[in-house]
Image 1 (tube, one colour):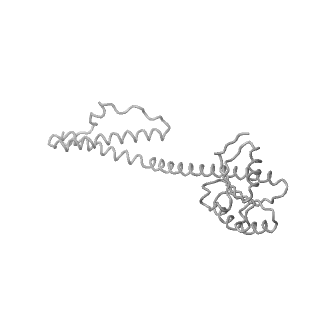
Image 2 (cartoon, one colour; image 1 turned 30 degrees about the vertical axis):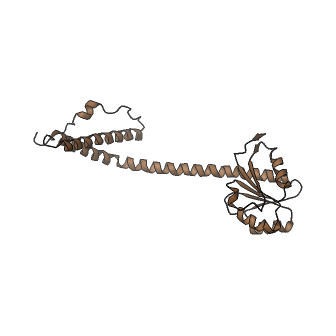
Image 3 (cartoon, one colour; image 1 turned 90 degrees about the horizontal axis):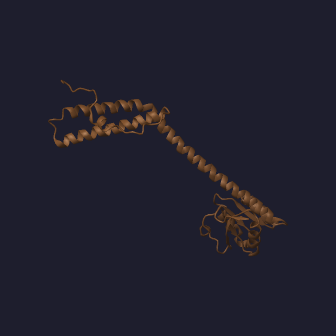
Amino acid sequence: MDSVPNLHAVLMIADDAAFPRDLVGRWQRERVVPGFTVMSTELFHGGSAGSFDLAILGPVDQRRLVSALKTIDGGMHPVLCVLENASQIQAVRAQHPRVLVVPQHEGWLDSVVLLGTECLRRVDLTRRVQRAEQAVNAHAGHAALGKFMLENRHDLNNLLTSVMGNAELLKIDSGGFSDLARDQVETIHASALLMYELMQRFSSIAVGVPPAGEKLSQHETNEPSQLTAPGS
């Protein structure tokens, strides 16, 4: 037997001590055993149970049956209710159609374990589906961003070329600038070169070509392009 108490959490509510003892004992014969939290209706107050994947309601005080069912049937987790009274079974099925009712006849332990195991498998499947949907949504956002970049990369490159060209012209004719102004021009030019390199890498990825791992050389970053200053 592989006991995995932290894999799933099962809340068991019963006022008969024999019910959780017999059910846990039967479940421990299975390959995978969830973790159990056992409470009486006197101790159970909804939020006091913490988070759980499956709720099982056994024999309880008749006066507290309605309130207990109302509380545990309000979440997203599956609920099993084990009842022996035919009138109770009919009433619960009518008022709580989402609750899975198991008559407490001979062999009820096997029925509850089998049905509970299937409920926990459904919980796992639901979580996997939710994670897959989240991944799809994340990928859709990335795809939309990539599409936007692809559609606008030529315009971005043209804008960057204009910024770099004007920055280089200013560098050539910066003799009359203050030290602060020259530093600002250098910063603009260096930033434009970095942005241009990023766009080149993006374009390489877009066409399936591995981006170059080398940055522009010091010679390339220091030399102006083949633009000429007006009047030179």
